[in-house]
Image (cartoon, rainbow, N blue to C red):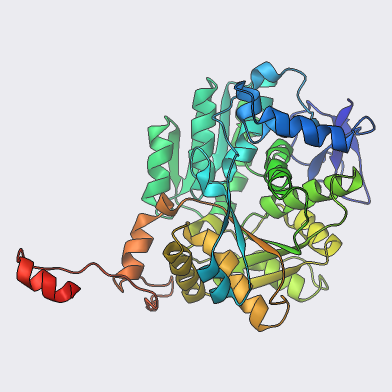
Amino acid sequence: MRSSLVCFNAACRASFDINDIIYNCPKCGGLLEAQYDFSGIDAPALKRIWRERRMSNEPLEQSGVWRYRELFPFLDDYANVVTLREGNTPLLQSTRAAAYGGLKNITFKHQGFNPTGSFKDNGMTAGVAQARWLGMKRVACVSTGNTSASMAAYASAGGLDPLIFIPNGNISYGKLAQALEYGAKTFQVDANFDQILALVRVLTERLGIYLLNSINPFRIEGQKSIVIEMMDQRDWKVPDWVVLPGGNLGNVSAFGKGLRELHALGFIDRLPRLAVVQAAGASPFYEYMRDKGSKPFAAQGHPETLATAIKIGDPVSWPKAQFEIETSDGVVEKVTEQEIADAKAVIGRSGIGCEPASAATLAGIRKLRLDRVLDYHADVVAVLTGNVLKDPDYIYRYHTGQLKAPDGSSIAPNFGNAPIVVPNDAEQITALLA
């Protein structure tokens, strides 16, 4: 099956070899995407094959990414795949969260069940496979947390040297600990995410290091598997809405591309609407889309949010995200730190749990429902991008009333659950529990 890299810019659409080490179009500077000849695809047959693969003990089939490899066939040799059995993440329902969001029902696609605890694993297994196929020895990424953990694990498992660059003091210790444990050489830079990415772009080109941020088109191909698996789990019944948190916007780009391909190939009969929710302090895409794209996209120089996974002021994938939102008749919303914190606590009380950025989805759903964008009976899937233990300090501070927003204002523990200090006295504890 023929594969190529194609410029996403509609005015350019230049094509390049699938194995060229490029991240932007050399002709116009636009983003790149992988494109395939899908003429031999048989949707009903593949649906059966993918279900049968669930019963196999072969590593490639046990992966919730590579099980669906026919829809991202960029590799000539699957021996280069490094799999930690990523994907296979559940769909979870919560009546408590649905009530909070103003819906009859809600379903969470929880990517925190991945090997390193976030959705990044779906894309990273694909990016690392391409790096190995190209013969690269070192890989690098800029990260506010989840990308670093994922890249460190997959690179180390694949015999590559992972190099990680993070904003100094702006990463949760839960995420930084993963990168250190997985053996990554870690550089803490006195700059924000967007400034560091510009720096690392220079370093990777100068030193022949493979870049594995979401600007890498193969990361996006791996992340498509999230929505393919989700549709498989739903027996190909399309939801009305899919809601995602928005940081660098690679995920909405991947979801949109995957859904469009599924629709074009006859796997699904329509497209769901996509909703992206950003933190108010890091919401350049919201601001741009609010003006209907009438003004040039403007980056935020100093994004601020405790939801560090989406603390990005200059998301590289915004042109792709804009296309996917407009194609699906979707929306973009923003939510406050208080709204994120409360939504996170509600998800926790549902017995599910997630990292702060993930909770932007439920906070956004609640807001969209109040604005009557969502119907009470809507079939909604909300994507939870990271595990509850990614930022435990945030959780403790919220429940004990110590959590403060970036501007220093207090975040009220509206759903707080502080621990109770008690004496070593059965009678007094009995009185408390009576």
